[in-house]
Image 1 (tube, rainbow, N blue to C red):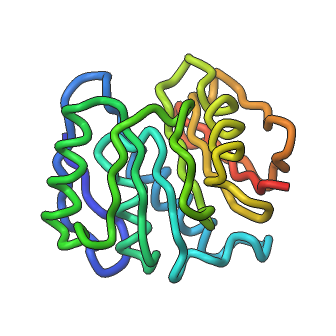
Image 2 (image 1 turned 60 degrees about the vertical axis):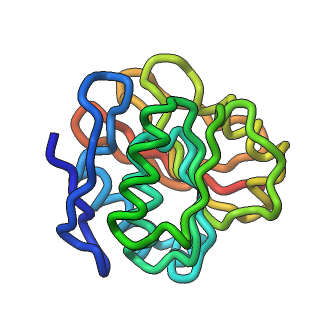
Length: 187
């Protein structure tokens, strides 16, 4: 599978991806559109990628967090429970020269460790069809990862639908092929 950073200082640089269904990176078109929305979206909450602290939950290859670093985020934390994906994610960060600004936590985003401080933007791309996104959003908020005003971008299968859990306000939702990208703000 060919996977590349789509924008910023690492634009066009390849990332290693895992074969199979265990890790399904966000498609290039959806990733590009999501970052355009974050950079230029109407709500003021969106225009905060530069110097942001970001979280890539269900990180897989790290494509979303590494894309954020490429586009100006200050630091990215990655949560991933698959051991092979964790190793691949660390290798991708090092290959881009982003190891120092990346912190990888092997673990489950639905049972995250306590946060040292909240992030500005969280990216969640859980496995499709398992209903993990709402559970993870609540768990991340309870663990201090998402504070009032934190933005969350959630990718789900368009066919699955998505309902924002209590404490989150839906800002925008778009469909890209079989994927739906939903933007929320923690209230």
